[in-house]
Image 1 (tube, one colour):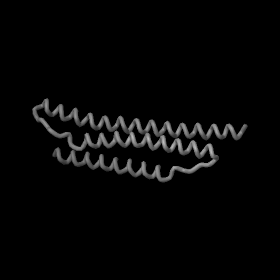
Image 2: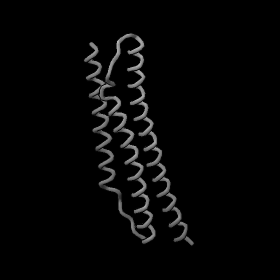
Image 3: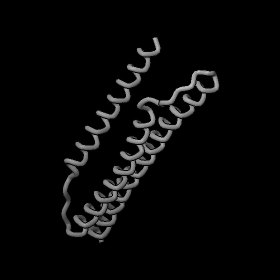
Image 4: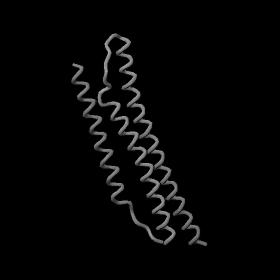
Length: 126
């Protein structure tokens, strides 16, 4: 009975981890949508003020990249969930390793790109 409860506990932990991947992915998608939509709204506002702009700068592209990253992340989470489920059924476990490093690196690079873009926009306004 203890082995079955341990197995169930491990599978439930795997599901909770997958749900954390889903929540994070949804947040990244929504964040990307907000970035892109905000840029479009600013373009419309400046047009109403008589300063039409044909471009939204990099904001829309950064929003699109964020949305795509969220989609890739949820797929990666699903693949990780399925792999872990299979390993648990076999009585094995393998830490995520590379996937965790990849997500961390890409998130840090995207954050630096956003910060750099904001600094660029701020300096170009003065």
